[in-house]
Length: 84
Image 1: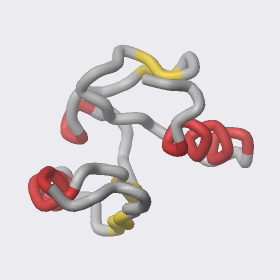
Image 2: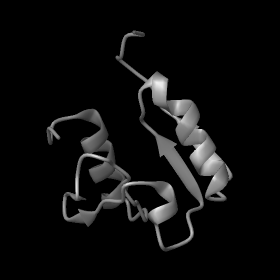
Image 3: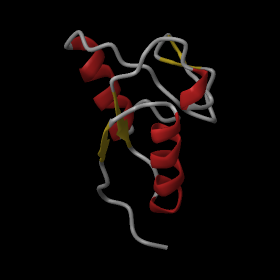
């Protein structure tokens, strides 16, 4: 993962503001020193909300995963990516 990516910058900003941010990423074991989880259901603490920065072809499944994990607040962010 490129440390200059928008998602990495947003993650750092949220952490700097004191938000309790838990990264979920299939491709990384840690991000900026924070443990990364492979799926939402693997997170041990209660999750109040999720900010999705996923590709359009995976967003629907991730929303289903949020519902299954009991996450009721879901925000979807999409910018700069072209539809396939």
